[in-house]
Amino acid sequence: MSEYPAPPLPAAPALTLAAADQWRAARVWQRLNSRWLALLPAVTVVLAIAFDRTPDRCDSLRACTVPYAESAAPAVLLVEFLALLLRRRTSFVVPAAAGLLLWFLPNALPGPWLPTAACAAHLLAAAALYREDAGLRRAEAQLATLMGPPMPYPWTLRGADSPIDPPSRPRVRHILAALFGAAAVVLLAVGVWQTEDDLARAARADRTWGTVRSIHDGGDSATVEYRLPHEYRTLTAEVDGDRTVGDQVPLLVDGTGWYRAADEWQDSAAWWLGVGAAGTFAVLLLLSARRTTVARRTIGDSAPALRVRARRTVSGVLEVLPVDGGDREAGLWRVMPFGDEAAQYAPADLDGPAAWIPDPEDDEDDDEGEGEGDEDTPVALGKADAPVEALLYHWGGGRNRLVVLRSSETPHKWTAARAVVLAAPSKRDRDGEARDEEAQLKAQVARSLADDRAEDPGGSPEPARVFGLPTALRCAAAPVAAVLIGAVMNFLADQDSLVDNLLRPLVMGSGLLLGVMGGFGWQLAVDRDGVVLSGVLRVRRASWQQVTAAALHSGRVTVRYRSRPLFGFSAGPARLLHRHFGGEFDPQQVARIVTALAQRPERRPLTALPAGTVGSMLWLNRLVLAGYMAWAVAQYLLR
Image (cartoon, rainbow, N blue to C red):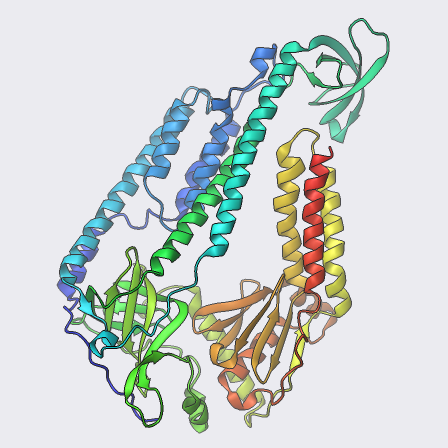
């Protein structure tokens, strides 16, 4: 194909080596702001458990009731752990607030020195994060000064509208955030009401003594016989704790069927943990939805811009280089396109003038030209691409950017896409390439394609077919797993524990069930139109123009477009079954066939599979999951 024309570009200021060095010098302690900070609350919890000397029994009713402030301490650490673990960058406010709460909440941590040490560690981490954030703000200010006034977009110079549509509205995240927020409010209200009701009943109850008659659950609970004051009938009660047959247990009874062991701790920490977890998920979902809302803002006609060079590494990541450096210069930023929208500068038809139009991601001309030269079409290994000229626009706030660059391969097409810009990693291999798992995936894709070319150099079409585990196994896996998980959760349940009776069956059990569905219930079909995957609860489709390869990595087969995974499935059960019994569901072979069909159009099937060939059992997965979740809630309410 002939060369694509070059679009008119604005005269944006250049990113020089001096400006890049100034930006690097402004960034300090950038490695500190990472998910490793989640170890701080985790270590605090471990130390609190190790140094906790709280007796198993309490002496009086007032001493047996843990105050709300003390019960909320574990929830503070849980919220901090989730915030530090689930977010790429965390504000210094999170560890600072957690440290101060651990200091001011009464008896939040045991021992005379652990509260002081934990508070000091949290405040030191907050100070370090503040300095790192201050350096980032200083570097961003320098960058904004270098960019100067806004520059028009390439399509604005031609008097056209933006060809890139905004991302879809984050409705699902808003709904989930509302549900988690409502759950936090309900848990808080129910927890306070139940705790206060127990305290009021205990204050009005009579005190009596019961005798342990039998032990259950390996000594964790016991059956006690007792008599109400001024009555001769014998009643039974179930109490927790390590007891022996014949022990005398002090009981509080009110004559209405309510009872409680007077020497058991009454702690509302479980309710606080549920409130903290649900509230944290709600806030994180809202923050994620806000980032998407910011990205949806209209790009407008202009934005601050920089003239840079871009180099695609062997892992498929774009690195930004100064314009006056060498080709081996270390990258300053990593540019990762997001969203499915991109634009290219090309003629809309054969006879029309060039314009910025939505990028179809693949040209028919490229497919027709793949003949003998197709040997070099797959992902290249070894050296990175040569740097090419590019423009980097800043828009919408945060790390949102628009990157406009020229392809390093003929016919040198100009493209534009939204992207997230992150600082490049400082550790590099001796050849100058970044260390990431994408390079390993590229190597695996290249090996799969080389093996396919060696086995079928002529490129005979592959038949349209469906890969997956046997039908009987796919149908039986979800119901059997739901029954087994329910039995285990019921065995591990505790009579009066919210975590054991509701949260563990609902969260952990549902997660295990979804994992089983993903590992056993997948189906992947290839035909003339593309790839179809039936996953856990829905069917995903991608045309051959949207697929570049498939790879088996970290126990999953992922169908990929360039370096971005589109969808995939868990490959552990299939690999294990294929190793012992064989069958046409080897995940490695599935990934190899998808890669060959994506990279070699002559190998693609000539026929299309009927609609509904895959995904016929999704209704069973949805029914089993809904039934299990209904059981988890019902068994808690009926206790």
